[in-house]
Length: 331
Image (cartoon, rainbow, N blue to C red; front, side, top):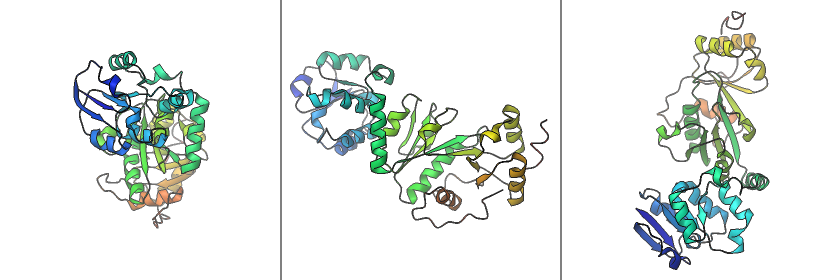
C-alpha cells in the first residue's frame, strides 16, 4: 500500500491509479513527515514538494533524505523554473533523491521502474556536487575520518561503531558510512549508512551539516574523500605474516600514515620492537574493547590525539608508541 502527501498538486495526484493506505493534504515541516513515516510501513510515498514547508531550503530536503528511505519516495516537482533547474536537480541527486517527476505519466513510470543512481548520474554535474560539498564543509566544518583495515578483519566495522558512540558522548553530531558492504545494519544504530562507491559523494553530502562522518573505506580506494585516515592493524603473529606475504612493501606504503594497532595485547616493549622491525611509527595502541560499553577512555585519548577533544581529558601516553622476528623471517 502507498502514501500520498499532497498540496498544490492535489488535483493531479487524486488521479493516480494506485492503492493508498494513507493520504495527507497540506503543508508539513520536514521533521513532521519524518516523524510520521520513518517507522510506518509503505510501498511507495508520492510526496508533493509543495507539501514540504520551505522546500527550496535544501536543508529541509536533506532531513527527508536522511530520515526516510528515498528509494521508496517519488518527489513530485512543481513545474517552476527553480525546481526544474539543473542545479536544483543536481542537488537532489547529490542527496540520494533519484526519483522525481512532474506529470502523472512520469510518476507512474517511476512507480513501476524506480531510478537508481546510474539512471540520474547524467543530471548530476560533478563540478556542482563538488561545490555543494565544499560549501557545506566550509559552512559546517564537516570532517570525514576514514577507517581502513590493513590486516584482514582488523575490526574496522566494530571500531567505527565504538568511535561513533564515544564521539556522541563527547557532544559531536556523528554519522558513519560503509562502502560496498552491509555490516552496519547489525548494530541497529541511527545514522550508520551503507552505500555503493558510486553513491558515496551523495551520501556524504546528506550529512554535510554534521560535525563528523566516519567512513569505512573497506577495500575501496576512497582515501581521497577523507580529511584523515586511520589504518588498522591487528598485531598478531598470523595476521602480520599473512600481511607481509601478501604485500612486502606494505609498511613502506604506510610511511607517515596513522597506524592504529587494534585489538592489541602488546606492551610497550613489544610495540617498540614492532616499530623497529617494520620501520614504521605506531600512532596509537588500542587493546581489545567491549563493544557493548558506550564509553572507552582509550578511544577518548585516540580522538584527542587526532583533534576531536571536545569534553575529553584522557591522556594515553602510556599506551601510545612502539613483535617479534616477523619481518626478518620472510626472506
